[in-house]
Image 1 (cartoon, helix red, strand yellow):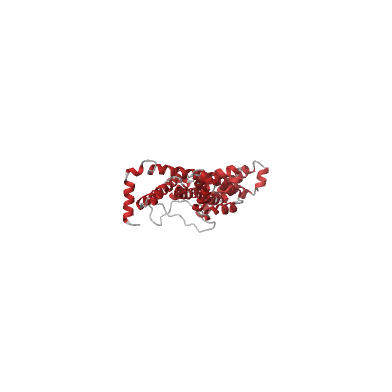
Image 2 (cartoon, helix red, strand yellow):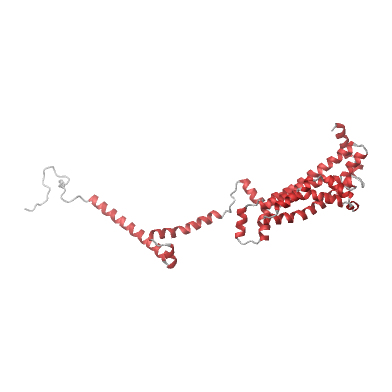
Length: 332
């Protein structure tokens, strides 16, 4: 692409007259958006229910995906030409609509079916064990888990439809493709480049809008934000609840181990656990008393001299000279 073509395309887009009127950019943009949106809506109505149901039951998905991929193998332009030459060619935009729907169904069907089938089986089985019905399991568990792949398929289908809708101009339809075909007819390269830039910008805009919608309606956005921030996945009261339960169960287990009461015997005797705990307290108190008594006895034995040991006679009272009688009277 030469610099003159880029400069000429910029000048064409900067001309106000090219944006107004039935052949202007705004009118062609409205036609393009209507055609793309209608085809995408029909594709979702056809592909989503089938993909969700087949992914939920886990049967027939491979056959449906392979059949839908035939639409990828057949060129959209060839399908559009064949439909235009058929009796449907006299019914306005229906050849273009059918061709675009066949082109948009495969990414939707493939991604949605894969998302449902790749949902965490442990979570699904846990929800089924809680008594959820089939529709509840699909709506509350499988679809939220498959949401990223579902939105990926929707974005892919939307961008493909917006980009391919320019082919409608070849069959006499409207849209931004008419700007490109008019440029080819007038040998105006600048107009052709301007039309291609408009289509590319529209596709990027649609992609960006769907990304914002994906982030806004993501049912798991809170959990993913917590995981990115490093916060624990469990609730704040889970650890305290588990700790309280463990603390409540601890004395029962210890009393059974000390008293020798089995869980079955405790079940047969309602007060067995209470009596065992009381016995544990009494035994603990008795052990403490015995230890205290033994400590006192050992202390007394260490203070009193043993019998028969040599005793040192007391010395004279203070103030008397050495060798003086102590003043004690000795009985003979």
